[in-house]
Length: 275
Image 1: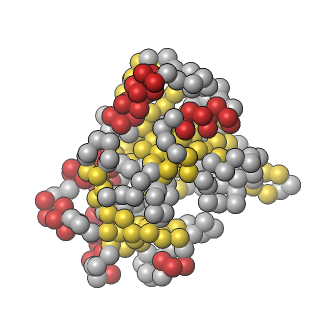
Image 2: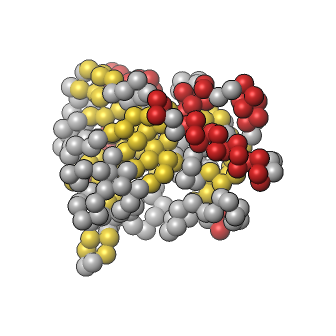
């Protein structure tokens, strides 16, 4: 097994592992260590059917059921297909087309996803890359004044499964979507490191602050998270299996030609309550 860094910001490729076969305890421990150290890991050239991917993901922890109705082609409650394939003229996958702003999966749940594992089955000739931002580095880059402002604060995370983020500027009631408040800064249970836990797509407001102050402070946090030096951009190949840590990263998707096929299989791993 080899661990090869992918960028100065975060990310590593793991070589010499066949994820379609059960891993020994010692090999899995090495993979998990690499994941905690690099935040995002990718294994290239994998041949995973649904059962193999579910088995691989389950080694990291309890799997989280999906919460959207768009999970055609499977009866497994932990599996969701992401992409723009169609049947009878209608998309059969979740999040079929377009760009997506930075976010953390299931941050609007009481127990958000700890990890997300995405396996590439079909990719467009260009576009559709996934960007990952390092929440550790972003927190460390904040001024002492900003760290003091957000210390002990919680932010309301809001999502609607049909429409995405509710209107932050208009402060639409979070009750109209699925929502939960989590610490603006969370401590990773495995590494003990502090990470920013807000994101541009789903963080609605910081609790206990006036509207204008919350909005301005969130803009500073978003801009810090999205600094280029804190980002790794993954260019997909067919057969990539990629696992990212939602506790210390946010991710985004670049747009792609909707006339080209992009088809991925997603499994999420349930996390704890952020603290």
